[in-house]
Length: 241
Ligand code: UDP
Image 1 (cartoon, rainbow, N blue to C red):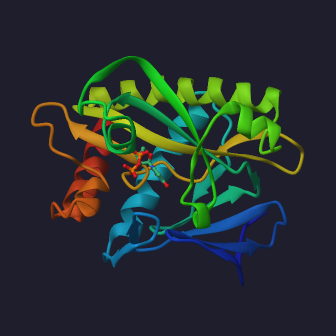
Image 2 (cartoon, helix red, strand yellow):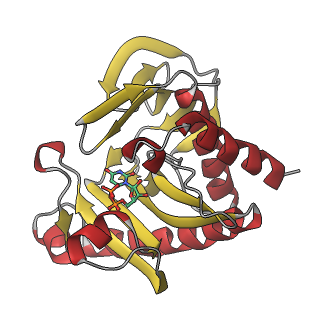
């Protein structure tokens, strides 16, 4: 079927709009130029940002599909858009950390930039009003946000994704410091990787200079956010040549 978007806006979030399509199981995803941080307290809009995050995320989701990680991603449909399987999102943000930084250091007083002996997986409860609090497996199971089977599969997939992405970024001179994933269930009950993977949701440091090439440039007011996102996009293009 030739998928066409409808004007029926189903949802508008901080970084994306979701539209219905002529297929009830398929959504039309449109990336926005807006940038937010600190739970929406810091906001800006950068022309060209949406096109970069969409194209980077489409590229990385395509890599996931090719590596047998089931995802919601179907195909890119434009600079700012792609189509995806409709899913019910599991209300957990899964963060994987390879090096220490960010909220981990702030919360626990851990030194910055230490490579962890193994990837650290953390769960956060997706709730903007509560500021996405850190939770344990026990919370996720007890309050029904996930179940034992799905949670262990989510963890297995997240660690496999870390290995695939870590090797890919290493090959283009970038350290995959940490990132956030979201998972969902399709209408037929299949667990899939969903949402996005981009410099908005990952921390990328240049291997040689340790320069930050991600949303921390915006969070920490380091300037040239777009240039950093473009650099990630360019290097990923080189990775497939
Ligand atoms: N992250 C995200 N969305 C969130 C929170 C975190 O994409 O709502 C990503 C963030 O970009 C980083 C990783 O998850 O790559 C870990 O973020 P951290 O917990 O250190 O939070 P932060 O310092 O960004 O508040």
